Image 1 (cartoon, rainbow, N blue to C red):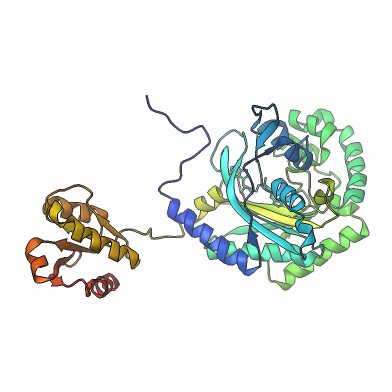
Image 2: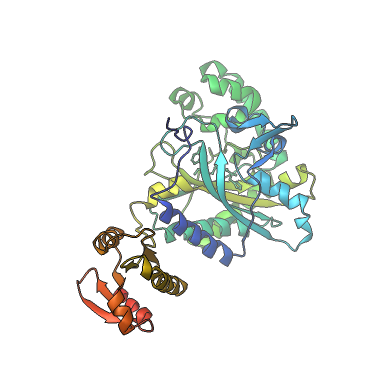
Length: 419
Ligand code: HAM
């Protein structure tokens, strides 16, 4: 009987070095912008997602891993990170700390979607959330930081698209206009959009079905209905982005699949990923902290899909995995104590080293060393020990010699640097 992983959930084995490289860059770059890491639980009360992402979104209606625990509490595997970070921000009174409070996270998210290229049921996000700044300066800076990060990973051909969804007031106004417009065309919409029309009319804007696109060609767009404050915020964002030298397009059809957004929303897409073309996405959620019982707090964030990043940079980036440089071979169990002394010494000096855990012939140990691709083998033999030395062999050049314990580190570094 053999088990396999669940559909849409992957083991990360071969590509782990790329993952680690990406994660190291997240920490390095984001911390330069004063973001601190936050780790929240993977399982939360389901209600926090229903209340933030929205009851009438695809995520909540169809995609949540939601179940009752042994006490009958309804819990969910987090489908995204923002709601949990907002919950933690309020629960720990972080609004009492000086603003801005900036957090980043790296971790698994769960959505019960139909698995396909670029779409998994357990996927991973790098996310950031920033609390306490309403100025569009931070909106632009987040997009800039994202761009710096993606460039560091040598990802090219990305499109940056922005939009504004307005605030509670102007969006309510727009919804009414949209509702009236759609009322005359419901019969021409796909089944999904018919449902959206009733419950979440904004979502018809990003429907990919051709007949819907055709029926909605002259749909009124939110940008025409922004109130003066939202309009000013959106214009100043564009000015900031221009100043920072970021090329972007305004796409008034970006509405996002989560209900908490207000004002700025943005997506970073690529033509290299097929249908699932969004690498990163985010926006402002100025009302969410208050709606969770916290003080009114402007906030903004984004998340990057790590699997999609990996897909993009697996062709452009080579990350050399840390492999053993040295293999310590020993001729018989009587010499194992000496061999262990050498192995421990090398490892403590940051030289990745491997050894045989079973007593085997020198020939078989040399074969193993070759398979591991080490640079140098140190051979512990009876005759050499008597002389106070070890034998060594450079596996690439075939050069051999003898060295003392004190000379080991220098010798290995010299041979390792040469290749
Ligand atoms: P989202 O657009 O739902 O936003 O997800 C962000 C990114 O996660 C997507 O652009 C995509 O790269 C990746 N992603 C989403 N679903 C999947 C999937 N099933 N398989 C693989 N990758 C996927 C959010 O989650 C918001 N919390 C972002 C945010 C943070 N907004 C403000 N702060």
